[in-house]
Amino acid sequence: MHKSFTTQPVTPAKIHLFTPKAFASLTEDPFAGARAIAAAQGFTGAGGQTVLVPGADGRVAYVLFGLGAGKDALAVAALSARLPEGDYEIAEDGGQPFARIAAAWADGAYRFDRYKSEKTAPPRLKVPVGKEGEALSREADAASHLRDMVNTPAADMTPAGLEAEMSALAERFGAAFKSIVGEDLLTENYPMVHAVGRAGVDAPRFLELEWGVPGRPRLALCGKGITFDSGGLNLKTGDGMRIMKKDMGGAAHAIALAELIMSAGLPVHLKLYVSAAENAISGNAFRPGDILSSRKGLTVEIDNTDAEGRLVLADALTRACESEPDLLLDFATLTGAARVALGADLAPLYTDDETLAADILAASAHTGDPVWRMPLWDPYLADLKSPVADLVNSSGSFAGSITAAVFLKQFVTVKSWAHFDIWAWRKAKYGRPDGGAACGLRAVWSMLETRYGA
Image 1: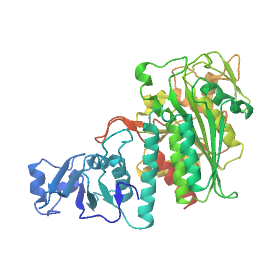
Image 2: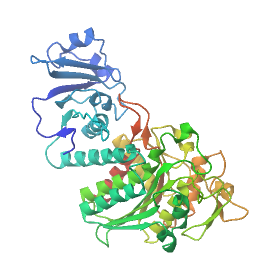
Image 3: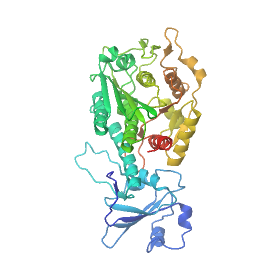
Image 4: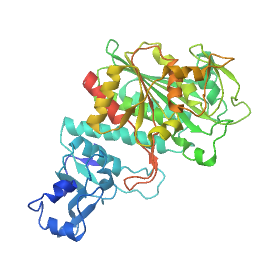
């Protein structure tokens, strides 16, 4: 069971969630003196408002929490982020589905304490016994694992560190695992992964995991695993480089989704592909003006070494398409342009598959995990043409997220493919510090559950 959940709470405090409208319409107290206590502390049900009411023993006995308009699916994270250690249960859900409450609770209760000398236990929420509680726990575990990977410093989350994560996952679920490292990438035809990562002290590598029974629906996942992005010879500024340990966030999402698929026993034949490399600087770093070959055979002129993620992901997508999956999904912290367009919370979705787009957006609405469809605008391929190669890896400042997706499309040969240009990060929110965040994970998992069944 996830460490912020319990099925057997000990004297749990009762939590009452309210929107302003619901609280204003109360005709009787949900517990003794509730309305008078709320009035004394100015509680109206506005978003984030919190009232803790002690019992006779001094411990929290009741909680009032404001949901505001009730549109933020993770609103309860602001509550679990500040509650003291102890057990809690929902007495009034404020019209929120329990799955959203549980996801938000685990989100707010999350602590990255690997490097802390003093560790604290999170507050624990009562969840149902049986399959429902187990499913909620699996989702919380996967999201926490994702965030741990993203939050781990690049000195520890190296390409070898990513390999260790996938290898451990394969061992846990009895999956096949393969790693292609360093110069072997050239022998095995992953030239762009090698080019991007060859300047790093830790050798680049291509990682594969396979699980499930052949003959079942074929599902492929790809993740960008740039464990630190200096920008290469097109060096980032200090501000731009500060959080680039998160540039393996796409790989973290793909790994976490694979963990959900395997732990739930989803009836699919799963293949997971991660290109792991550090975009570093040394005498053998790839350069602007270089022309790289790719696994697919297309040549790519380098306009900007800071547009490296699409290069390593292109080799991964080519590899994934070789097994002709029925569905191919990729996750990448690909462009700053995506953040300019949609900000931190919205996960941009690119696909030409109308049914897949509808399914993902329906799952997004169901889970409250925001995803926004962006256009795969083929005419922008003209901006990616090179006079000396098949493609150029950067097209300038206009429509940067779209042109990156169009670039990736040139390496995809299956009919059903979706690309997520995520941030994998969150500025300080819900009372917690800046750090790794799941973007679109719950929406995609819900889509897969609906499509394939557990």
